[in-house]
Image 1 (cartoon, each protein chain N blue to C red):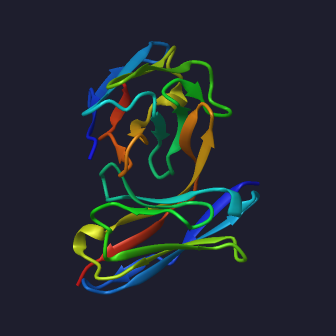
Image 2: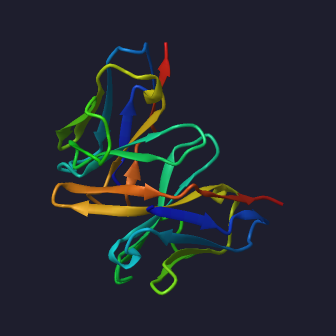
Length: 121
Length: 107
């Protein structure tokens, strides 16, 4: 079964750090680009970061630039998001999502169940 | 940044009826658009990519159309499981951006 499982969320004070993990199984992780997408309580979806299959291309939303770092480990079939200098507005459910790409287009076709990050004093 | 605007914010319909959801991009994105469905407490599900190609396992009652800046998701004969929030997303330019969502609720 194709699966993504996030972990690492929790309660953190403003200015603190967290490292999110996403464990992939059921597919060849090293062949796919991956993303982090977040959703604040009661709000819509917000893309956070992207990493290509080889890690050669990395992109961030402006809200994440300079504070978040995306990475991946082929040997562990895992995706990571290191989040520093956290702010109240970073509170959200964080999803990892696989990018599907074909000649017909692209989409985020496999999502994890999400991990909740709460930034509060 | 490309701004994606969805309308209406809420659509009320009865089971069996059709539904038409709109998505507008602030600049042309060719056909580089995807649609997602999200139910409460669940992760989003990819429905459509390339503006009109159904993802694996998506019922034929879902169809997407449009190109450039105007896009439509059509749901023919709403089923009980279709009542959810729908998001469009462009992947033409970085950053990837989502629309604000359309909630399809039972009338």
